[in-house]
Length: 156
Image (cartoon, rainbow, N blue to C red):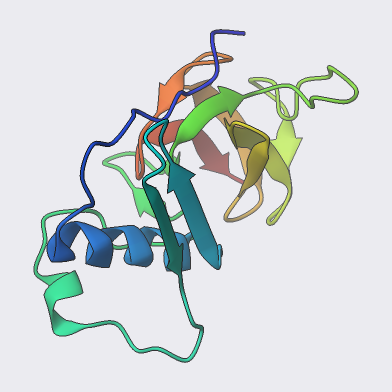
């Protein structure tokens, strides 16, 4: 596996638009808070309240706005499974070292097909529906961005 994602050091606090986008990403990833600090002692803690409605500015950005891995039907019948967050791709279970869903395997809706790792945090990527894994678009340890296609499924 490649080197885990390292969060870049920050010298100043993010502006209001960046804070809105970070809170949107946290909410969409099902996370309630994020805390960052640097060697100078600057700390940033963002907490997302479930009852807080999204602000109008949050939808005006060009960033992806989906939360859970979303099925996007391509020109064929295959379905793209996308990253609900960012991090290093784990195609193998960290405990058993077995691949979650090898190419050619059948998966059920909701089954974990891979994970994203950010430091000690792992986020599951699940199949949106029953299908056969056609192809992975990234390798073990690759740095994956929010909304990036991880794999394609052929529906059963």
